[in-house]
Image (cartoon, rainbow, N blue to C red; front, side):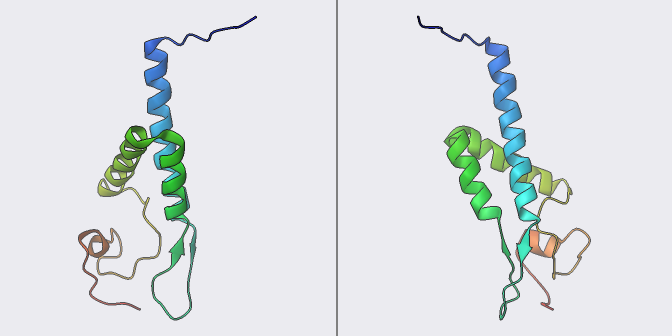
Length: 105
């Protein structure tokens, strides 16, 4: 005996939106875990692993939407990027956002 699960269109949209939001939050949480590497000022984070995981689980369209949401959260000023910032303007880390660092500690 087979059973077929039928999901309403609005429920499907809500589930996909929730998956996109959770994917962005997973990447934001993984960016906070950093391991300083000896000999280099650039720390290693779990963010690349989280990006691959979210993209693999959600697929290309929803994974891309999740990463766009993650970037939008960072552009809005939420502390989703890695905590350690050596750039000028360390409160918002504008140096890292535009790609110019004035000094490295």
